[in-house]
Image 1 (cartoon, one colour):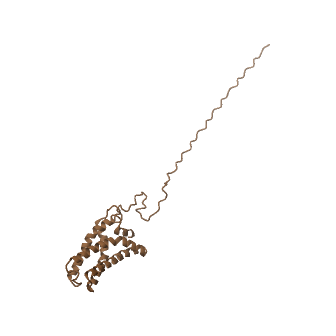
Image 2 (cartoon, helix red, strand yellow):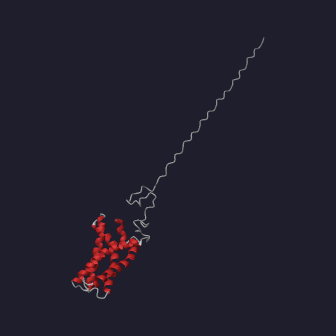
Image 3 (cartoon, one colour):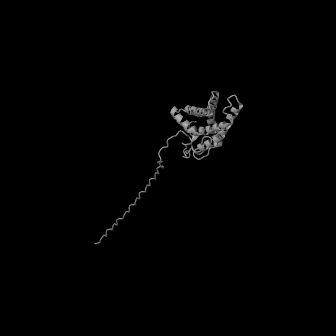
Length: 215
């Protein structure tokens, strides 16, 4: 008998290919930097609202060399402020001198009257411009007092001292050339001496510098 050897069937191992799932890298989202300083409020001044942040500090020149707290005030600016103050002072000074000599007041009475009128007209001239900027009367008066008090005081000390120093000037009368020449010289001297005082004050943000915010 023939033994039939059954062929051995070897099962082939089918190796299933390994499927590797590609790794998906999610792009990193970088959130923009947040300005934690908060929104900047507008001041209405383009120099202060500049985006680079360098606008502040009024003392860096602004407004035609008016300077601020660094003393950088031009002589021209100081002279203009002094001339503005001198205009009001001169009106009151001349008025007081004319009234005093016309009615025969003593020299001291004429000086007191001139000083009083100089302050009145000096403040009034400054207040006129500030009131036009929209400030109420009381606030405008406060600005005028802060701006002009020291300047007017220096002017009055100088020009009245000069008038008293000229022999016969106070008693000459308004019809005398001596009276008018002496008064003009006294006011000119007051202007020259008061200008550096105003420059010093304005360089520190005081005196007539407080008025420039309303121009």
